[in-house]
Image 1 (tube, protein in one colour):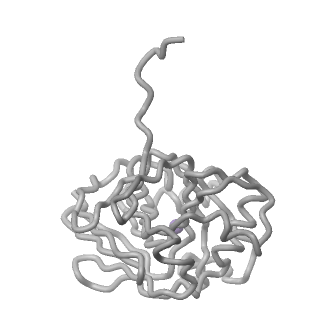
Image 2 (cartoon, rainbow, N blue to C red; image 1 turned 135 degrees about the vertical axis):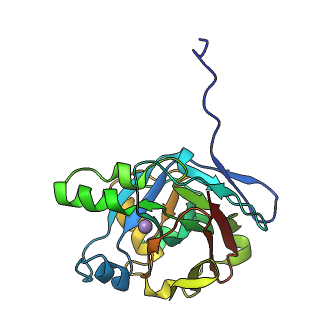
Length: 232
Ligand code: MN
């Protein structure tokens, strides 16, 4: 049967070596996965089970190496925040995955930004309603090229940083994750059937803050390159 209109194009993240692209199925995000960030958000930094939220696949903004795409300041916010994150790319389907087998499902890693309308998030938290408008808006998931496991292995200790206009905002190490990558995958796979094409944003370290039009955000993870965007 004929489509009523052409289907939306598939979101994709280019692989760093230029050999292929990673077509995106779903975007899962972990909330408060670094103790210092949990504290700055006024939450208990104890090791409570991880919690998850989603962004639509078309929230992805591929950020090619060496380029600085423009990111429009979104509607309905006056407190637009950066969150630098390690992003895990799933290459193999599975559910109820054991921690010991979790890394078998990973095909690569990337640097990503979980852009957030913090003022809406604060209101949402107070009203105890859904997070979507604060997290799942258009272009809320800029992401650098994907590094395949064959090239980068499974990083468990690596510096993660973010600067705005050349000044440090966030600086930590992925070994500070409250829930490690294998533990996060195992937890998530008890709620959802993971599929090739799923991306998991693993949470941000402390130092989140606002950006305004004209700001340049740069962020990276040792061994996984960096990204650079301009807020317009
Ligand atoms: Mn986040």
